[in-house]
Length: 359
Ligand code: PLP
Image (cartoon, rainbow, N blue to C red):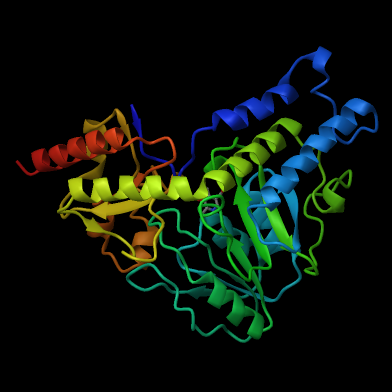
């Protein structure tokens, strides 16, 4: 098996798994204690959560606080639904979490188009009533890096807050500059599934989202999982320490894949992109057939949540691709644990299977 679906999720880093084990252990070690209990076992669990919070905060800008959530979908919903604002503007290639939460808010909406390279124009005009602008750092389907610093500056000049979905960039790139709210998730940076965070800039007012026992400063009620927090924290610390090494590794993998699939066309910007993602198309390619021919290679035709719908990707349509071109595209997602040998083998088999389709 060769795993090339690292935008859907990443494998758990051994270091993150190790950090989780104590909090999953049996009754003797007291790792199961409720971190909100006042006894020593509860306080030890809370101390581990606070260490994890610092480790996650180290991936994000200074001058804000980290609220743990169940993942980025919850963090985004909290940001969009519990921050006082009027209209919401978002890029046409945002994750469904942003688009659906914005729709559910009942607020006036403005969709910001992207160009053929998959980039939002940093000088785009926001509608008068816009009070929240949401643009992601790195796109999950085509890997483009958005001009978020400038967009945040312009949102502020407009009197709006800026939300950045940094799910695909966190732990891999420097944090988005200028954002007021940032959503991240552990499972895209080699941490466990089921935990994420909303970062809130100091001074930004946000209301409670989950109502209950008042955990997380009253903003997100519910018992935190020390194991998930510790795994997230360890994964974040590792990602920070390895950021440059991981980036260079991914650049090498992307270059090898581009060489092996030289006749294929890249979807999205050649330059403003994160190297862990390659979204490539080949005229006339039958992607479902390719996937069934190559069962041992785990890659995708777009986002995991959009797969299985049979519909062309809305991200590829937003960059101007016709349905046919969008449907003849594949997403190859590389990660820290992908080897060059795996990329070379997978690409050679993908190229051969594509040639065989034409025969
Ligand atoms: N935003 C982006 C860009 C994503 O890729 C994902 C994951 O699919 C999410 C948000 C949602 O994250 P989570 O799975 O933690 O809810």
